[in-house]
Length: 115
Length: 113
Image 1 (tube, rainbow over the protein chains, first blue to last red):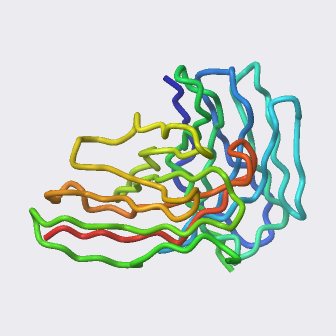
Image 2 (cartoon, each protein chain N blue to C red):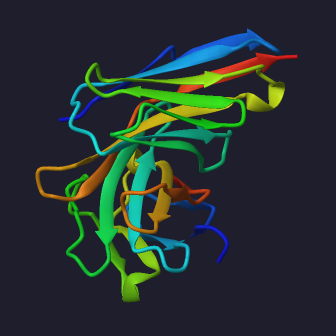
Image 3 (cartoon, rainbow over the protein chains, first blue to last red):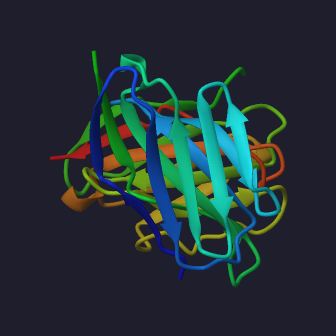
């Protein structure tokens, strides 16, 4: 059974700092990996999707990397802003034994950017 | 619609009552998921619909939970004889093919008292 772990569980940084969020997964037979953002009381917003054949994806100040063989992904946020404060979730997509595609989520990293 | 719509946004129900949660996916999206997010916990997979295929129900926690998707569009998650441990935020997501990026709704916060 796929397990996804995110470290740290919470992170507080001053505005302007660059930061890295970590995600690890136990089964490297994945199809893709997604990073999401969740604001309090809201649903999830998709940030980046990395296919298993890719090494990284970039969107604005965000860069996500994937090392499938070691079961790791990182989300790099450059020049953090107070508006980046949210919970960041990593989700691994893979086919189950029954042949259906499933997303397995980590518990998230709660980020606070202090003005 | 422009996004995934879920209703109601909040539901308070008495223990033992049945509840129905609704999800309107983005038009044209063939794949639809239901997840449950309990306080302080990660997202728990419940059920997955893909086109006309039989749904993957492997995540449903008990036979009190059921879901259907009519006409390949709207989905309803039904919880019978609700228990306090059913209290959570129920999230719905859809995607075009099932293996691409997912769009989530804002969720239904269910409180069983």
